[in-house]
Amino acid sequence: GSQSRISRLRYQLQGQDPICTITPSKNAGILPLDVTFSAEGSADYLGGSVTMKWDFDLDGNPDAEGLTAQRTFNAPGIQVVKLTVTDK
Image 1: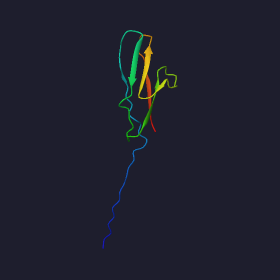
Image 2: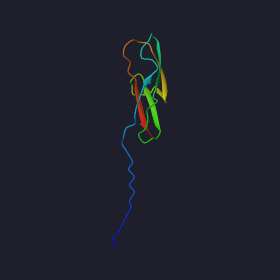
Image 3: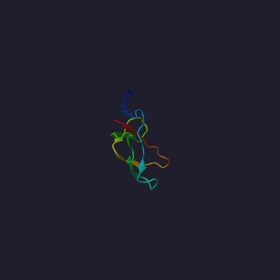
Image 4: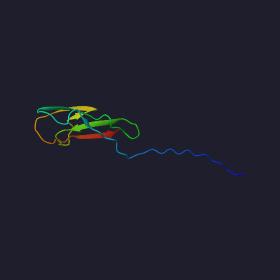
């Protein structure tokens, strides 16, 4: 007779960068401008946990960690905020 076989393949997505989103509480205002940033919506594609690090002065060192961070801007102009989301 013939031989039958059932195989179960499980593919695990690896090497995929996490989703990174930033939402500010304010986009403009009078100085000094207090802004709270939220990384809600940032996630790992596989549903794992992630860490969030905020860099407000772009020196490469995190100024805050976690889902939210607060910053007071004292100068007018465009402000750049860097959020690094890393999956564990």
